[in-house]
Length: 405
Image (tube, rainbow, N blue to C red; front, side, top):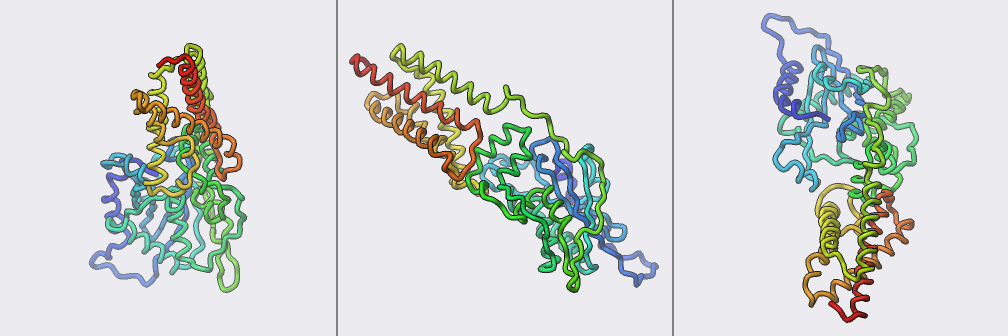
């Protein structure tokens, strides 16, 4: 994926691509009868250190005479108005752009770049070339990005499959992994990114995926393409005719060191639970709730619940529903800070506290049976509002016995 610089020069480069690839011969030159050979390669860039680089990247390279262009389906612009909101809503548009060799490989220092040249017939290679030249036009370049099914890796895969049709065969074996397993492999050193994915994506990413579905990952796409074959008159020929390294780098990419535990979501979740236990213990002993803490805690949970419910029920992101995290993180927590100030609502608020306790106990006990894997930080986060609600109920009972308000 690329930064704003490439987005800004996209139009210029596309014009260059067409000028180089489709220019007519100068006056006075003799046309040649020898067709220009077109070569198509799959380019894989290993993971980088930024969040949007963690999964690697895929491009298609097309060489045709003097034209040597890389087609990139990972272009986006952070600075488009409303980008963050559109991303949350699942309405993120990405672009396909064409870049010459030198520009295409800029910015990848330290990230290994591997080229797999494809064994295509002249017609198959020409079909891919023509498709890409058409797809990179401004009126065709934009597409609706989907993290798992329509990204910078699946687009090149689909183009290759379309060119070869039923002649293409994948000979490898699926790893029997789930989407979450694969995502965690890439996010292993990035605790907060893993936490966010585990929170926002639901049970659909916890089912075992097929070999073809694994190709949402550029690294898996490279692996499975290396073992693919093409049927040539009944003979199975390797799809990849040659492999070479264009940029040297580590096989692990430029991954940062693991997030220290003291900065991890689990640490902060445990810290929040400990603080809640101490404040609740103090409140129960004195027989009076710290309303400021109730406002702070339940508002925090309620606001994050709104975000989660938006992602689950309104956004068009894939794999967000069903999401069982909605059992413990939801907007209904906001009823407590909104109504706790009114005496006439006191019984209702107590009912909300009882409901929270029952639902959270059920969630904790039932989670091992649910078809969704939880982040370890979720469990102290589940216990925290349960502890606070139990504390409020104990305080209410103590006050009722004393006949105080």
